[in-house]
Amino acid sequence: MKIQIINGPNLNLLGVREPSIYGNTSIEDYIKELKEVYAIIEIDYYQSNVEGEIINKLHEVGFSYDGIILNAGGYTHTSVAIADAIAAIKTPVVEVHISNIYAREEFRHVSLTGKNCQGVLTGFGMKGYRLAIESLLIK
Image (cartoon, rainbow, N blue to C red; front, side):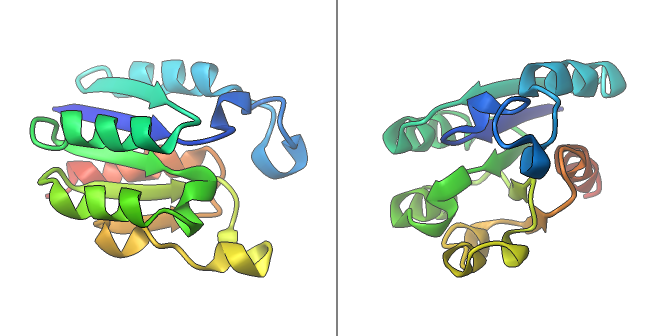
């Protein structure tokens, strides 16, 4: 099984960015932990602060991987183009948000991308990525 994790803008700063919201763990450390726990799964990680690069990655893996975990960050609430890219691919996508987007600013309560995803996990911290993997294992 092959799973692609795609993180959007500012998520390269996990571990140092607003630790009261996002925690103290770097994404690199957490991905390493996921790869150890799920050694039988090929887990690839990609992060970009650029909307078009996220779309390109969705197109690149969206027909050959078994699952995609997407945390589009702020693009979740603004990007029709990423939502369209999710709708255009065959690979199931699970949307993940580290914080509970419904407990934050009102503009974050709307996910343009979530309607095209298999499911949405929000507010479980970094554990959301693990829960997303578990959801993709259940067919």
